[in-house]
Image (cartoon, helix red, strand yellow):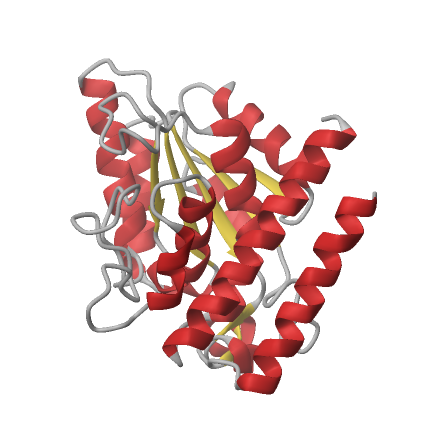
Length: 281
């Protein structure tokens, strides 16, 4: 991956983080921590990987994306706005009573959303169904999904893991946002799903472990998944909850809280500083 591509991905991811902060602050509620930690993954998927068309969101042969950790719409809406699926100005209406940008993804109301999610564990099951249909219909589109690490405490995730391996869904690539924190704290202390990699391998998945903020590693993992035949791929992306905003990083308290005015201004100042540095570079 050349330096210009890395720079552009960093710019996109930082803008997604700004959108996420803007959304949660404007609503006075939402989930900033886990939204910030997946911004780099979304930037790579929507900029370098997925076949999608903002002018034709329901294009039959598009790649599909399912946000299984459905509470992290601030990031999903951020990347969709950046890619032109709807006006960026709409971000400020997040969670407002008359807005189509609800707290969880709505496939009927939001252009670019392929699956309505929110109940943890169900998104990856829906992604399985999409991947199986592609196989049955002999379509070549691929399906991508992002799960939270705390979401692995849901039994349905492991039923889905069995399903995907049994049906050899090699057109399915899922990410685990492995930031180690959930709303109640450290995932290992709340209800440990560890070791994640060995468990998924035993279920029949191809597993790749990466730095979830390294663009080259993300893209290389996706390409490896494309070349893996006969089994689904899970990319375990080690990440930082609250990435990009100093006081939110590695702080479980920012799982589901909105910043106040001073905190909002500090977050935007930090992210603007990162953008300015990228422009200089």
